[in-house]
Length: 382
Image 1 (tube, helix red, strand yellow):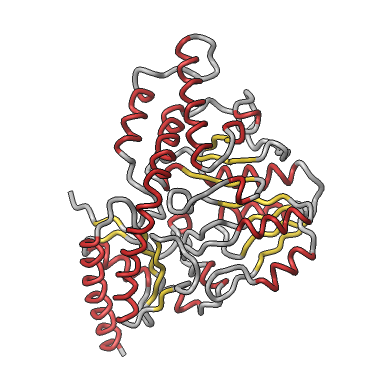
Image 2 (spheres, helix red, strand yellow):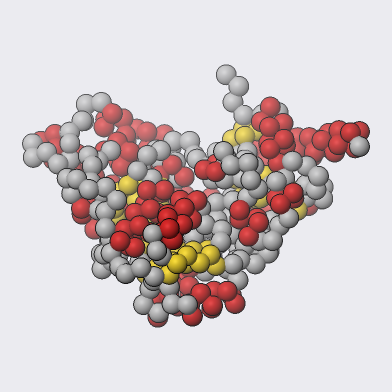
């Protein structure tokens, strides 16, 4: 079977073999409901508790602060909608480059009477300080700013932002899905009220995520029922996925430091080739995740380029996988002031634990050749 070299690790990651091994018993002989009082149920409950401890340890939280969900989208919705339901209507502020699973629930709040503000970013994708100060002066009730952008990889100084938000008495959340396993995360140091995590971005299974939330924060549940997860997320737990999530968190933290240096070097080598060929590397002057490169070539359509690269044996992305059905250019690039036509040319390459220097060198060679072909075709069509 044809298997392109995988360069789309920000979209999803292959299941870590050790994660799979830990999950397998819970897909077979261990099948108890964690709410049951018998031995099968007690085994399941112990497995959930163990995983909860591993997830908490990965981000410097207490196990009681971990609320398991079906993934990052549910966790983001749980905080935004759950927090809004527990307080008076007011202002919700999010960055202009948030993932759709933060932006869309914020828009839903706006339709129900909340005021929504999108905080502007500069040309590199960092929060624009003047607009941030104006946002604080408007006295928001809820603030959500992602720790690392899924497309550009740009990091925000969430700890500093959170300290300023706390002074105004607001609650702050950060989507940390892309940051986990790539940069160190400490819930206490960040100083936020909640962060969102997802298993399938770090070698864990699809279908598991978590909201790490300070117990002093009052939330209304999205899903009511049997009262699982402190009453904030009812429903029988997906034991296999939760077990896998715990192991994936543990392994991601162990690998993080050494992998960050290696992946940063791969990115530097690739972007050197890109710049030499006239590409624009977005957010090149900002602090970014070590594994992410987002770029475009003048006059080259991103979807067309990604399609040709796929047929040549490389799997990458023209933007966020979660919004790939949307033909519009990247909303993050538009927020950064990139012209729509140029933004449509954007291609995202993201690396992971299996990516090698040889693969990146080969990719760069094929990319340069493919871009030259497309430019020649464009010239002939004029």
